[in-house]
Image 1 (cartoon, rainbow, N blue to C red):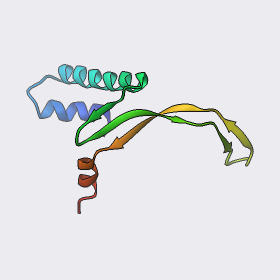
Image 2: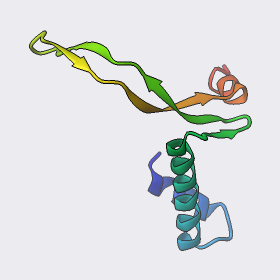
Image 3: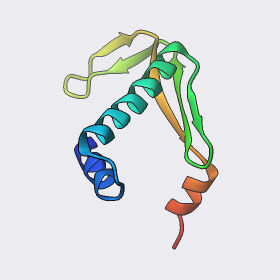
Length: 92
């Protein structure tokens, strides 16, 4: 599902106008992004948590040339699913 699909679904399932839903979705995404960037992270009970993780410097290999290169340390966004989401995904 793309962002536009999410906005469309929310518009169809509520009494809100498309512009209001788009604004709300944009605000939520921006707030989650800012919280991850600041290191605070976001936890949504039953769904999961968004945070940033530190990756140490390491030796990388270019798959085309097999050349070894040094990859510097960096932070990457990370999502950890909650228990309820895991159970729903694995439900038969």
